[in-house]
Length: 316
Image 1 (tube, one colour):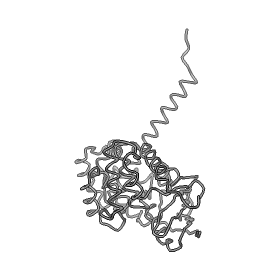
Image 2 (spheres, helix red, strand yellow):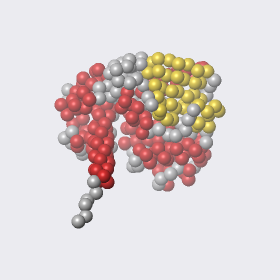
Image 3 (spheres, rainbow, N blue to C red):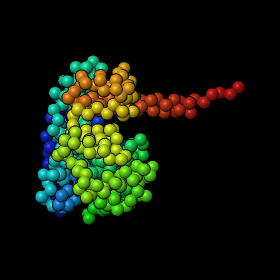
Image 4 (cartoon, one colour):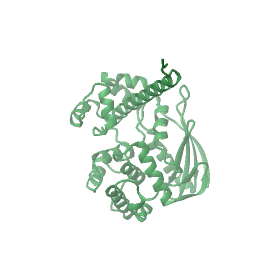
């Protein structure tokens, strides 16, 4: 195993806190985790396994990302760096994107409060598809739990443990071999996941970053159990397609409502034309607005509960 430490340049502005928050809420224990400002994860590459530790800059620091990479085979170094660039969306043009989106008054405030918002990408195509399917119609926490159980069931351990990183996310062949009983949730969805994994394993379904959005989404939606939301989500994150607006997503529609935008999928699709070719980034702003409002409501509820506990009604 070899180790490399690199400094990866990032075009400013870079909303590193938003990226860390997203990665933190989507981690699969054993495969990835976040501590302080560093994201750790295990990767399956062509010649072997790798682990990466990505330290994101704090506000006011240079925008570079420090990447510590450990590789089974040095031939995988370029592939590991490419995965990092895709994962953190480091090749985007934040000034151009922010300028285009801020031209719409409904997004101006969000762009000004979170400049340089990126679209979190995907380090591995098959993993992205399986995780997206596990997340269909469940909470983020529910999807995390299902992915963690699947990882433990497949038990594809790293040959050398790296801190809290112990496992690779299950390969398509391993998921297909486990069968649907190893996958939490409705049996029909579990079978669809196993069938997709088997198709990837035998080469009849190709899910990688080199495909076009039109071709990949057509292949995905033709399969049982994969709808437009899943196909669009995979295209947005894996292919780094900047122009995917997931108008059926309930969180995005919630963010749209908070900004006074249309919330019906068809109406929001029509409105979102003005954000092209950066509708993926507009969707991330709508997500952020909705999640920030949910966090505010939780904080208010917690304060109210605390106040009620500290100031109980006086009986007479």
